[in-house]
Image (cartoon, rainbow, N blue to C red):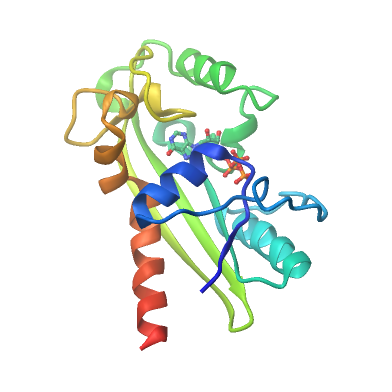
Length: 193
Ligand code: ITT
């Protein structure tokens, strides 16, 4: 079954491919020349559906989109769906620095956060979606070189290092993205039977 991965984020393409154990192709590689959807939804699900519907409408191929972010408890769930542009642009370094400064010297026990990933699948059989949540806390400073986005300031539950200090295989075995994708794979296997 061919599935278009409706994302321009190369890190998502790499992680989804590694989790699936298969080569997956994002929009760039496919030479996508369709319209860019406006992500103006009010939830991860709405935004994931906006991206997957746009890719399916243009390509006619079953399309999968990932909308994700980091939700910080003491900030009422922010940045949440605004994670990509938290500092105004699409600058990961600025996003991380802003979040660290917003938390300041808040104590460890009040720095709870979670990565959230909703994957939407849109195709001729309709629409479905799956969500994965990876709990942890926000670090006080950046550590690690792996991963992307907020990984250098996210300490997953059960660890004392950031997600960016974990080997990619470790992150990909337990992340919000892995949890959402596992459900999607089970769904695809079930409907293929
Ligand atoms: P597409 O919309 O093209 O898929 P995007 O990067 O704009 O790419 P989102 O709108 O879903 O994707 O924004 C996701 C934000 O959450 C962005 O700031 C990421 O850096 C961050 N994020 C998502 N998953 C992450 C992960 O596994 N590790 C670190 N940061 C992550």
